[in-house]
Length: 218
Image (cartoon, rainbow, N blue to C red; front, side, top):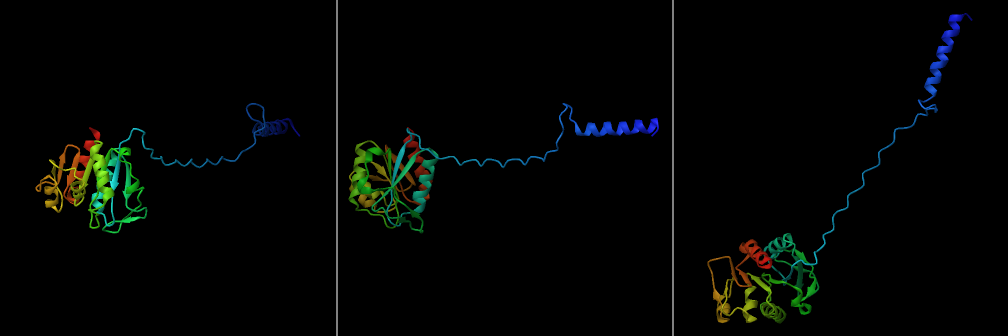
């Protein structure tokens, strides 16, 4: 082997060495490209009622009017109000259009002092002579709560004897309200007189809910 061939062989060996040795003198071992870890799923936030949140009780009966229930409830919950539903039975209550609501408490077990507002929802199956509804209305007025009723539900307030001298509206049985000492207003959807709020039907459901929210915020 001549001198030139020897030099070429030495250069080749040097290049091989460089390929096998890293810059720090450590042998370089090829590694596989790491697979990125899958993103950690973000947990959905849990809705927690603030300890100081206002509380509203919705009173419903069989074949309640869904709009009169759903719209005011959504408005109040958007304002941070905690809503509880009461009915005569612990069974699921069906609305006029077939929607179902599971009551949280029996009307007979309601303690009015636990709530800031009582909301009576109308409907074709409304129980105008329910003594528990009348009791709740009486206690709510006596304790200075917001008392709201829509459609036929103001009749409960009349039979509870809490509308004397008050301006109210309703969908029907105006004579019952008048006999109870109320002044019936028929040309508006919603009437507020102090802490008593009444509405004449589903067309006023949004204004009704907003009036309740306003009263709770005062």
